[in-house]
Length: 569
Image: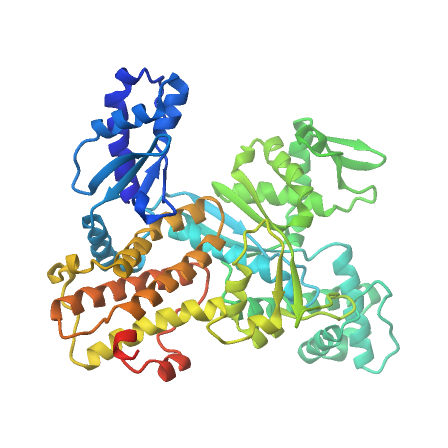
């Protein structure tokens, strides 16, 4: 990356000038920014002002000394002192040409990190199998899958896991609801509990259980019948959840059942391990974890007085189980309503002997779903909700995922289903996809005209000298840095914005620069620029789980030629 080269160059200059400046050690690492106005260079740094502040000297004189000490480099055209002590840097075009060659060689690995050998588990969605996934689960799925894609691309070994809460009070209420609908389907008197699940989907699940198991379950002993119907309904609900997630472009490497923790004795084992460390105590007939020792506002019950475990009790065993599988780092993707759980889960990791920094909770704010500006009601138990399948049917998985990743995880957002469903270029996802498809069309039509891309080594990239071409190459050069920051900061929204910016930069280039012309050398250079842009756009879309189409209907109607506005395209 050019930034790394410039920082190294500046560091050499600072080290050389430091004795005369009276700069204190350790010397600051230069930080680069892109000036808002192009007249102020390609990059700027305030490192001279930082040094001057520490040394009590004039910042402009400090900047001048650093500029004077800068070694010559093929990638640096000039450096100037500006304002109160900024150093503005202008780069040559050669490094941009190197970026183009790098994209041509690396293809879809451009911007990818080297293998780290680090094993990371990302656990997300993890909705109870009490019915269909709703639109309320959509942001969790989009964020979790995008993070897994990003971390994989960054070089880590990533495992996606779905944790099924298939035990506890909610599952018992669900089981009683399925049981009532199953008996009703056989013409027997039954009633869904008042605090049960009343949606029509429960009757559908019961009918599926009836179709697979037959009517015989109705005549089993009451307790056995209840267990069989609860498990049967949950099993079918799980199948539906898997199918819905697959439609949403999300697959998991492992599915973990909460009930298995109890069956294998892992909850009792984890509690005993904490007890030995003095982190568990008994009071009021229950077993408590000393979570206040780790910043929680009160201690938490792990085992109730009746001997059953709480959700938190299962969480304790689940943390230990994850680490026992050899993961180096654990990521949980949770809604903001779980903010209070963070301290206690990280505290459990510490109490069990693990570094709490190996447990990371990615919190996201909730989405307000609207339809034409009106709120969409949500209640799974009452059956008044929009399922994730319905959302996919209405707006498509691509549009849903892209919009859900437009905002930072810590920002609440509105999602108007009617607006997102609009297939126009005002819709961000279609704007970006159209850019990718447009480039595919350009390359396809050039080939149809008998123009084939020659090796990039033979292309004269110095011909890419206009402002739109330069801007596009710089946008391509920013790709790896953007991806790395998005992975490091768990910020997939940076990718959707980068994709929009790159598409906009390409559309400007396409409008102002004729791609295929009578100038064969210029045609080759611009075709390579277009090809490189297509590659990076495709990578950005893939990292957020959105398809990169080679064709779009609008493209076939709108594009009448290979070039831009100059030739009627």
